[in-house]
Image (cartoon, rainbow, N blue to C red; front, side):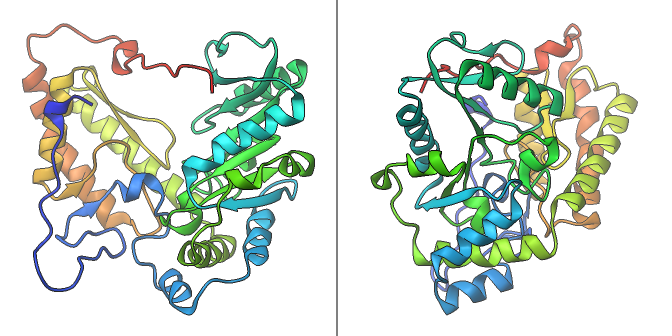
Length: 343
């Protein structure tokens, strides 16, 4: 996103109690479609989660068991304090287990950067990937003798009640999770085969805070009783279909699309100026969103209808802004920002 398109949040009111968010609304009554980058699956300040935090941390083993029960294959679990600690720890475990050094990010179009030789690990972001593509990655990792790692920091419990591995039927050797485990509080986790979990260095995994562990226990319990993924997919599919229809009616479908996984519909822009117009228009209409629309259990038909109404007003403005510019091919919607490919 260009800097010119950045819209800062309005300042919090001074004095008085600390501002709070509730459900899918912020302290200033904006409807939140960012939800801490999609980590707040249940809604801000969920009563059961906040009650668990107030009561104190449960035994870590019980929270590990709750996560294990939600995932295919009953993997072993280790928690850490931050999501950012989980993936490096998993890669280091793969290096110890294989005796190799290279770790590559997998691109669905071109495969592992730098090829499959001497690979300790292949890291995949499975969000939005076709199951057949993930199955191909699984085969490639097995052929190369590499550890397959899913980064489920975003996809966990959003795309399926068992994460992307449950949706695709493809089981990684290791998977890493983030703050969605604790409804937005800071935490990380590495799950997987027992011999790889034993290869983790405990010094790479500082213990999570007591509030985060308590929040994780409550969140996982709620997700087991009432998965959010089915509702998110229905709401997201409805949003995508209606915005696509409105874009076609307005003649803006060559400038804008709402693509990606239905649980996290992602705006794509044919021109940077359209993105800036979108950001300003959404902020002016009372929405907190700077990228993908992170749906949560707190969102419902009224919030989605309000967002659709905002698109109905903005899409004709996109056409005005793009008038005189040539058509944009489909590839032009996505800017080619490639990861380095090595960890």
